[in-house]
Image 1 (cartoon, rainbow over the protein chains, first blue to last red):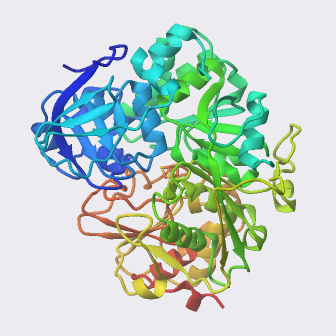
Image 2: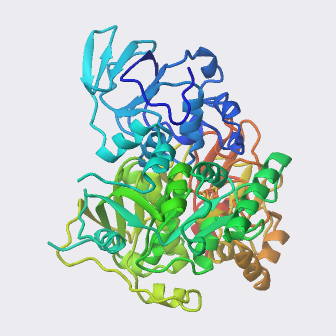
Image 3: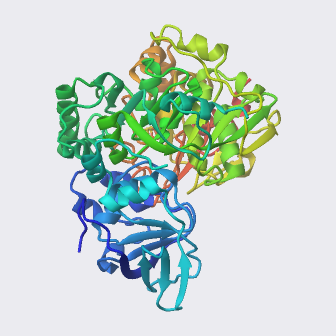
Length: 176
Length: 418
Ligand code: SF4
């Protein structure tokens, strides 16, 4: 189920929620000591290790990370969204993201969405409908709207990330 | 309606009249990458199968995060970067040159008015030179290497005007910790911060770099300042291209303007495990410390080592405590050797670490033991930051660090400064 670069994101994503709080920094996502590698699978095996050493064992392919405010703050290390993506996470939902993390995730083709996550509990089954731009919580039967992405971000996500985007277009094209 | 420095710099880098909130594609004057995030950027760049980077003279690599290499994995990544750079004609600052952000400013690679990106969140440091600079991820960097451009949303600006000047024994590190504590880790999310006022004008370049360096710790996209005499005299002899300082228009529009009087500020300490968990030194003093680290792109400059040496001269560090000192660059190391600064630090019991990031990112040197407390001049105290999630990190100025080394606990440095 692991998505590779260039795989276009499916219109409806389904998975269970793994819930985190506010200000989850990139050091928590992947500790600096593991970052010196280009083996992204091994990177992914240390995802969130400092917060929960058992975390990756609990994951099913396509599961979601659900967080509070300022997710991904701290360093610019792209190893953080890479570890999340290669661990098989389907998307990250948060009240807000740190700017660099958000961009990095989009560039990797990892779907990230800003929405009100306060009513999502651990293990909640969720559906993200990309077309309708909503998150459905199958436990509470409630839906919430995600903040729309900038058109350029949508374009990059739709191409499966920045590399396939630039391979195709050779340059940036901002639709006005 | 007038423009902020950000709007002016970005307008000139995309040849359009742009405003905060616009999405633009801007030309980059310098792209910097290092041994931690560079390899991923190179891997991504190779996927374009385009051969050459857009302009090799505007790219540099610095090997600093794990230097000298601790193991064969890192050694091979260093070689990979150097091979790529050689094949592209890109300059590499090799092992021992220093922390990327010090090397970049010291070597005169940034001028006022520039737009700079680097694959490191503290690339915002160069704002002290009246440039717009910030960190990007490795894939974004691959796009910059290919096109020489970056797309971005033009940020609004939070202007902080510091009135008065810092009292004796209180430094720009204290002011920045105070600022972050007051506005919070996400207080400037999606904004750029302009640091202004007499408090900034009175600072030397070393102190100004500290402010901009840590602007990311309150979520800012960038931190910057206007250029003045201090900027120009610092740049003289370092840069050899023409540049034009950029100023706010008088009627520029800001997201917010804060005015704070700083003349009564006290030394500040950020407590574990977030940078915005800030207290006055009086509230923290007495906390026992096992390791002290003076260095990094925040506070590893000559002025920082000087004040530490001044406090420690003729004294010994507390028995059982480790004092690690890492000059931010080879030039800083040389200057502090010539001045006798390193001599007196070593005489006091310090261990000198080769220029680079040193223990800051927890990749090899100076990893604390379980339960230990570290007092550091770095910019981050996240759990696990220095390589052990069972250690605690406190952040303070070089003066507070040096004074605390004498007693083995957090102390107010002012009593050692006469
Ligand atoms: S010294 Fe620390 S904060 Fe600065 S670039 Fe190196 S790892 Fe990053």
